[in-house]
Length: 180
Image (cartoon, rainbow, N blue to C red; front, side, top):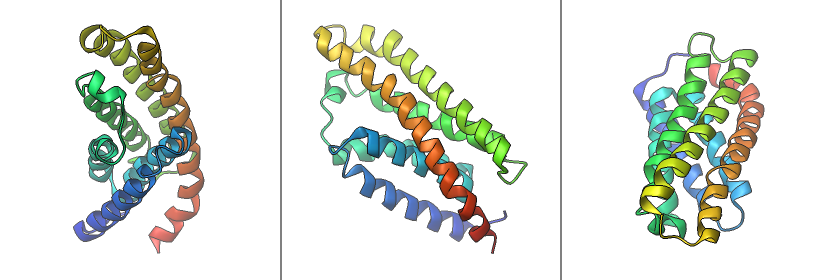
């Protein structure tokens, strides 16, 4: 699907606005906002291209930090922001690689979503467990370390999988509408 730069910028801007609106409700439940943000990252990649997915991936943790107080961030010297950015980038690149030549048919898209979700989670879990906690959070009490591990392990795989399912379900009718 060939797009003009104006279409890419417009779609990315709309998705960015939607992502910010979703992040406002982060205190409600990360099990709601996490999957929605992940779905927006995928829809940006599929609907506006890899540059949109990359831009949204980088902006998402920054806007989340600006919108919602996140108690774990200052405790780690804000090192979680690049970890989240990298996880998001891995996620959207996996989706893009799986679908770039096939105009996002069902099977390659599903594979890209699964691989992206799992690799995102593994990278984020490993960085938090082996770099962030030992280097930047070594003085934290055990409950805070457990919260870090839970937030950037269990929550991340769950949010990525749920976001992938949501993106897949939204993308199926949306891709037809965007072709018109």
